[in-house]
Length: 436
Image 1 (cartoon, helix red, strand yellow):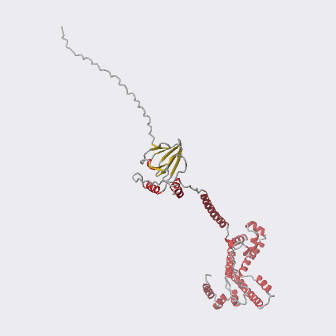
Image 2 (tube, one colour):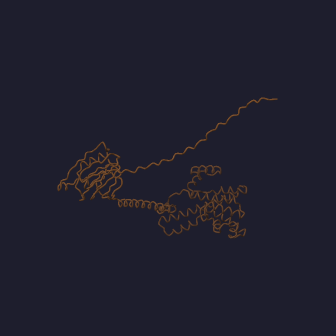
Image 3 (spheres, rainbow, N blue to C red):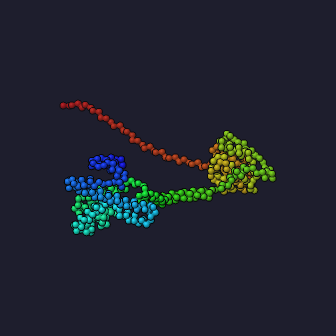
């Protein structure tokens, strides 16, 4: 039924049509144990001559009514036994269990009735369960369940309906009638499962609170979850390991750069000043020749103090690079440096006889020779070569002349003599007189 109120409405209309007591029927709707079937109504129905189909329906209604009466009697017996248990009688507990086992619901009776028809027809045809299995392909276990009315032993309701249809068709029974009875049994069983129960002394043992199953956390642990978690943890560990290796590699590759020669040269030396006075020379910046970077380097050099010689060789040359430039240095005839200078660095060279320098940008270098500042040795972009000796001082070598290549003249083409044209005499025609 869609709802309880609609069910009552249908029941009232049906009772009016059958000319039954509406109040009694509606009371029985709420309290089935108070249902009383009048014998007069049954006798009146039996006296009326109806069609065979109608009489068959009436016979089914009679069997249903008898089953209901038996159910009411069994309910009364069970309620009396439960009353005894409620008052403290423990000896009748087994009796209640036996009575409940013997008691069968209306739906179960319908299924048993269908199974009885199948069994009777099979025995009438003198067929065994194995023969039925051979022709219908239904397992013997399910065939026996159908004949016994044990619907709960079948795989599912749709499969049970299909097996029953095939079995009834094979036994040449009325398939439509069997299927209608089976549907009524299913509907009755459904109504029985949703029937209201009144809590009281009669049915305290039958009414039980539903069990609350605890959901285990192991149910949520699946193979996909474990695999995904493992991949995430492995990725996290790999990232940490890579970060640790990179930081350790950077620490290992840290190169400790020694202080540059210019820093050592330009540092103040108080101990040397106390023990041995040195000559202080202030270099004058030449703003016209250098850019801003060279001016800053010049200012730093002007504020510093030139220290004493570090070696005892007679020729000592300090080269302070202001800009990048090509530089070649030969000490006592051997080349000790050839390359580009770094701005701000100082280069120190000492020799016993001579130190020769060659640069492609004379304005980029500042020279200090034997603690005497020479200054910038030339202009921007000027190629300069200087030789510092112990005897003659600073020498500017004379540039060597490169040999001039002799130009070989290419021979000019000789003119060929042309042919002299000759004059051709022309013939003048003359008139010869005719002599007869």
